[in-house]
Amino acid sequence: MYDALTPSIRAWSKRILQTIDACVRDHKQVDVDNVVSALSSVATWPGCPQSGMLFSAPITPAYRRIPLGVGTARNYEALLILWPPGHATPLHDHDGLWGMEFVLDGVLEVESFQLCPQPPVHLEHDHSLVVGVGDHIAFSQADYAHRCRNLSKTRQALSLHVYGGELNCYRSFTHDDGQWFSEFHRTTRDEATST
Image (cartoon, rainbow, N blue to C red; front, side, top):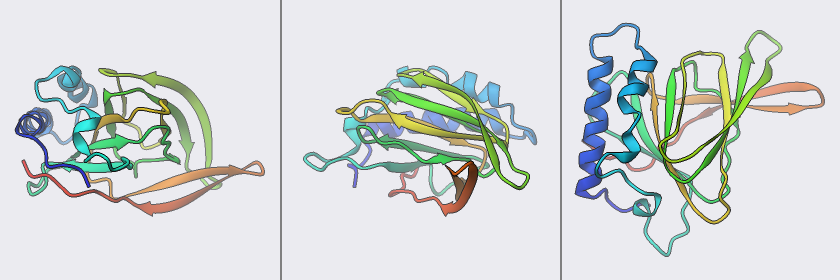
């Protein structure tokens, strides 16, 4: 469990949600680049959390997905993800949603893939990026999948994720004996914060 968000983090979180609300309000088609531009300096905004602020020492930090702004209906989801040292996600999609991820603390490696959904499922490696504090990735295609990893073996990382709807399920992908396989999963969220 993580500590309650401090007033400065709550104010930062509220600013995040207000900024996204202003970008997506009354838009049938969201301009992902516009949202990315509006949030591009989010890691420097006052109250931006650091990974150590979101867990109670001496507890070893675990992978956490902490939603922001619960209790208010929105056509997107924003959450903080806390990455333990060395943690890696499986190769996964985002259920067809657009999304963006901003690194707030630490360094992540992101391996991006092009998903060809027609049976049989097939993925092609597109590129790999190393993203640090202030960097981001964004995707607007349903045929996008990636794997993310905290590059540090000793430090946590923290990132802000915004998706074009609630990310309630996703597929993970594995490659074995020349074939790709997928498996459906339900997402989990830690205790929510209301803003």
